[in-house]
Image 1 (spheres, rainbow, N blue to C red):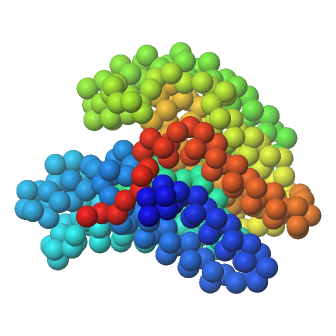
Image 2 (cartoon, rainbow, N blue to C red):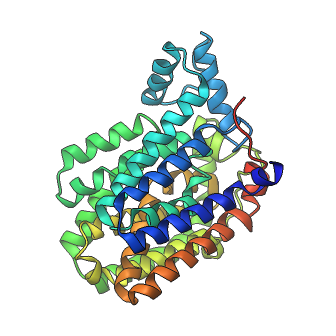
Length: 362
C-alpha cells in the first residue's frame, strides 16, 4: 500500500495517458468524465498535509464549521461557499471534493468547446497545473476555471458579461482581476494592429525589455507592498517557497511560456479556424509577460499569471494538430505531457517535498 501511495501521481499519469489514447482512437468525448472523476477524488480526499496551502483551507473551514468564523478572511464568494457547507455540517473533505469537482468540470467542459480531445487537454492540465492548483491553491483553481467562460465574450467584444464573469471569479480569488487587462489587450493587438508580424515583433521586444525591468522595479515592488497582506504573503515572507531571486528567461517555466506563445503567434493564421484562438493567445501572452515582470517574486508572479495560463493546453494542442501529421502530433503531445510532468513536478522536487507520501483525509 505504501508503495502505491508513494507512486500515486505516476499511476494517475499512466491512467490519463491511456484514456487520452482511447479518445484519440474512439473519438468519445464522454471519456473526459474519467479524468474529472479521478482528479476530483484525489484532490478532494487528500490529507491536510498534502500541499503547502491545504492546511490553511482545512483550518479555515473547520473554524467556520465549529462556530468560530473565518480567520483567514478569504474573498467573499469563497467564504460564502464555506458557510453554506458548514451550515449543513459537511466535513471538510466534502467541501474540498465540491470545489475540485466544480473546478475540474468547468475546465473539462470549456476545453471541450475548443478541442475535440478534451481528455488530452485534461492530461496536459494535470501535468502542468493540477498539483499546484487543485491540490494546493484551491481558490485559484476555481477562479481560473470561472475565467474560461469569458473567452467567448471577449472574442465577441461584449464587455459587460466579460466584466461580470471576471468579478465573479474575483469573489473566489482577487488575483483573477488581472484578467480585466485581457479585453483591452485583445482589442489593441487583434482589432487595431491586426498584423501578425507587428504583433510578434512588439511581443518579443516586450519580453526582452521586461527582463531587465523586472530587476529594476523589484525593490520598489517590495516597498509598495511592504506591510500589506499581499506583501506579507507573496513578497516579503521568509517562507521557503517564496523567493526574490528570479532567473529571467532562464526560468524554465518562463522560457516554456515564451516559446509556446511565440509559436502560437507564428501560426495564428492556422489557428484562426479554431474559435477564439486569438483570445486564447491574448490570455497567454499577458500571462507570460506578467510572469516575466514579477519573476523576482515568483510566488506573486505565479499567482497572477496562472489565472490566465489555463488555456495553455488548447494552444499547444491546436498548433500541434495543424503543423504535424496526425500520428506525429498525437505521439508528440503524449510525450510532451510526460516530459512536462517530469520537468515541473519531479525534477524540481515539488512532488517529493509537498505531495508525498499521499494520504487520505482522516
